[in-house]
Image 1: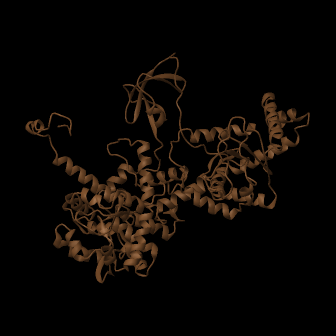
Image 2 (image 1 turned 180 degrees about the vertical axis):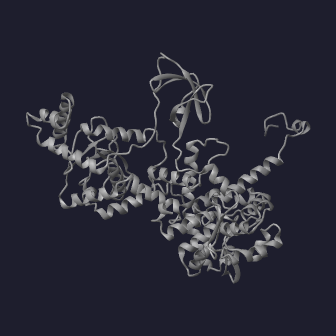
Image 3 (image 1 turned 135 degrees about the horizontal axis):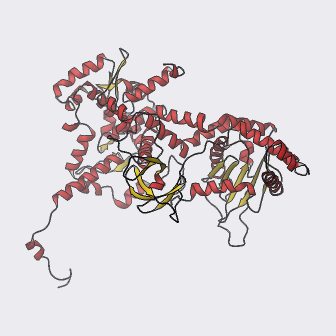
Length: 639
């Protein structure tokens, strides 16, 4: 179709692969196959339930968490308010909406019902959360040129008349503009323009520093610049940096540490004491950033930003990966966000996942202005754009908007430790922990029946999870990986149909044979390249297969997994140690009656633990009156 004329064959096949279940191994339910793709004949067809999903959840308008406001007892829609405001509103409260005041009568899962409340006092003002479009860089250059021209004429007695005549300002607006730029000149030593960017840094209350760069080029450019600078300053100082931006500049909060000094920050100053000085030139990372470096820094930082999370969620909604409830029920936006985060975490290791690529594209092309940033950086490098700065005792008049944005962004944060967005957990020596708690305790606590039940479900040998047609068998190959014909029969219902289904998959090019551990097995065609790379010794491919093996099995030993894939035990031990250190596996002893070291997927171990608790609860019950009476009516240990 014409709208997709720029879509490459590679991108097209990645989308088809996603719909055909290429990423179902992640375990995320909505990544299960939606189409059947016959690669030999070049034919695709919808799977059961796909049409209903498209009808129920189709659409390109993302959910922005808006509640409808309705006149009570009718279907008259008055407008929409933000979900957060709706959660904070209770029956009987009055709020201003439009030009009238309204009393809340009822709050449901998707609407607020109100009645008119004319003349009611103490009405609340509603609020809406959202992103403003931001000033384009082209308009920013014009704003900067105007500021440059006005700044050059601040001493001109005819400036006010010129502003009124040439810029169509009334006398008060002209006077305000002149006074504002005059104050900036006095405070910063220069007025920010299209040819001169100005920075200031001043101490904050707890000993850190605020670094503000004033620029007229608009929020899309400043957002890209702030994210790139956050990455670079983090590398320079060794600690986390907070940022904010607006149409008029950007701000970084710098802790009082030496470059490369990590988190060894000096204590906050006492009242009346000066803040610890900033080491070296605080603008050095800004001046040294090249256009090419900015792109690399931005790509590295973007994936952990809130704007990327929002773009990913909206793209996933459009791609039917976050389906809506049936029967017109509304899904709360905060639940959608949580599910989107789960999906993002599941596919983070798959760099070719189409929704990841689309989220990056949307941020880089529609939200951020990377080309404009690179043009500004070239100007700074060449000297066409000057960059000056000074330390000031406090914020300039231009800082108000940035300080407000920063406060609004961080006011409601909790006490989660600052860390890299992709790894926000504290380091833990699991070996020392096992020495403290003992590795054999779980063997005594886990119920063998719970272990067998969870393993049957993970391996799809449970009767309710067996394949019932060729598509179901293909799903198992995608989820579980390589299977022998005998293993397929264990997972087919009825078992004797597995042979015929496998022949159909092989004829359609959807299943291919591989040799592993000295025996022939079958894998989904989508996985053939991964198995070929693993056979050639590719480390990433082997770790991917190990991760899937752990996700689809209960506790396993080194010899078991090494024999399964035919890999050297020493290599497998090393890779298991890497995954355990990263928190992707748990090492210890888990199988009741066993004595060998084992590994297990954390989510699988949690399922076994919960199943054990459920069995224990079912096994308990109230004691008999006679048993209760046999308890001694005296404190224990007292004769």
